[in-house]
Image (cartoon, rainbow over all chains, first blue to last red):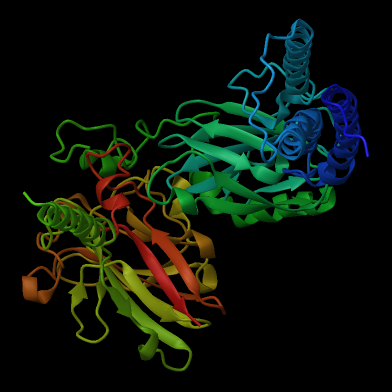
Length: 324
Length: 242
């Protein structure tokens, strides 16, 4: 049998690398993209319980699908190198010297530039279109749910343009929620109606917390003295978790509770029941405001006689012997 | 120095450092107050627990910190701890002897009793001489009246109990000066409130943190440092044994 000439063998290897490596990459990338987009995508966090959550899940699907050919390329190249380009026993020759490749470099720069610019445009669009994507937009939000207004803080009707207001109040170490359109009652339960746009007004009574309704795709920092607005519209009834996502003290890890998305009739019934049950404490709450200043409260005579003109806690009172 | 000597020195130094780290971790970081175990004191599905609040903690190195104490069921003494253990699916009858003075609540919502059996707490005031009749209370307005000193809250069970405080300026200026406020310390007769309430423990076991919602760590940021952030003072854990 005639031995294969070195030139023929090199040519065969070159054809294998130039043709079959790209073909393998394209085929595996198509398969990978389809699997990521269609099979993995619907299960990506944070789910699709609300408009903002579904929007975030869609973004992750797009990003993961775009990243798949890159990941496949890197892994395929690694495996290809280990199988075909490994050193053979007895082969002491050097590899071919590298002189650069203008075509590859140009393709790489253009390709990565296009991907990055596309992601910048896509990310900006995805932040604007779903009304801030569930993130806190500060006290004067730019992006609001289409067709909604804040025309009344004293009433709310399902399906109307007047958006449901829910104030989220962080304090060490619990969340409380206030519903100004239902008499201003405050409660430790977070209930929302399905299919209705919600405006969260997030603030804090003490340190910085972060309101994170994970499966609703809502996350907004709770700052003392500041109102941070976030929007969402729940798609499905069911429970969702609320956590604090800003290290806020020793019980930060325990600062969580469970909210629930109810049907609209069930939500309205709950508000009426809560309004009655909490009437006594609602009367002594301060008037509804977007922020609170616990250092100046209208304290009664005995409090003032004792020199207690503000709520418990203070800001580094220099007269106190203990300093942080 | 010979090679074996150098190796031995290195090993000894390494072990000394490890021992130091373990000592610091257990002694300071992992230190936890003692646990008052009430599980064996439950009878007919009920158990009685007594807690005390004091305006200072003279038994510790932080005498100006407010604190809770818990009655030791075996000795009857008040121990400086906020950790206790109770059986599951049991009615817990709690008595809190509130010896501290009043502070307006940062959030008036915590002035409402929640999660107790009957939705109320019973309060009796001791003015230094006599006890007032025990009366049920549902809501305290701590801004309008000098009515709340601390709260006992277990957020995981939806329990919130405002601890009533002495009601007059004179009483608030004549608080217990030595803790715990007992006859042995000649301070049991200082003005105080007696708060009683009951709640049911869950049917399954678990650990439930409890805390005070009055930021009473004077001198610390927002009043939430010091005793508010240190186990054994104004926060603790309830261990429910299944």
